[in-house]
Image 1 (cartoon, rainbow, N blue to C red):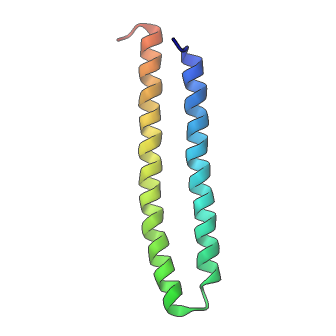
Image 2 (image 1 turned 30 degrees about the vertical axis):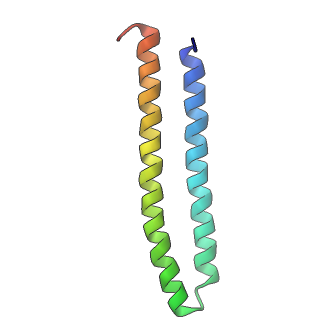
Length: 83
């Protein structure tokens, strides 16, 4: 059986990975949007796509973080005997 500290460390690492990927994706999106800013129709299309994808990826990252928080809370309750 895993201890609560092991679960907590794993959750922390996974949260870091989720949000690091989110930030990296944002920088890539900004780079592509900046590269296409002189091509007017392509610029508009990429901006609309990246805004939509940014919203969707933010929702996904928050949902994954919340799921990890629930997992950590379940592990804490199991260790403390609060079930």
